[in-house]
Image (cartoon, rainbow, N blue to C red; front, side, top):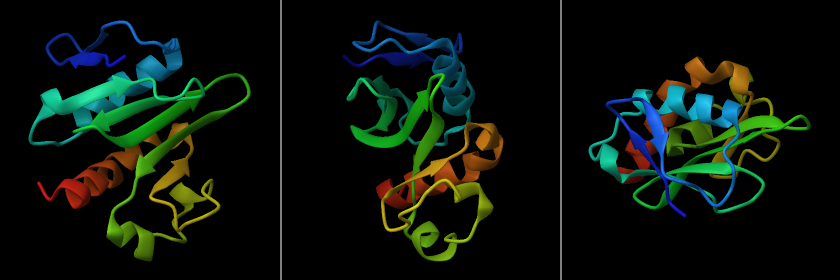
Length: 127
């Protein structure tokens, strides 16, 4: 099920198929207002997997989050530039296969990731 984000209240709205835990919800509430997109109403939180929570833009995954006792990570959509020039960036040390389109990062680096998140979106959608 798709759920959305109320930009006025800064809250996740709707009821997902998968429970979005409090930490994942907090992370999404931090990320979403910092995403620069032409059509913010096209941002959706979806439960494509029971293993993680996904933020989509125009029905394409841009962020995946997993935060449990056993695993804490975020994956972000990479730009073409990142796939070539950010291979040694310590922000992305968690990602083993740097040829994948979404890279794993540590959750505690969240604020440093905003420019990369927006770059990946801009590159993908040419907005």
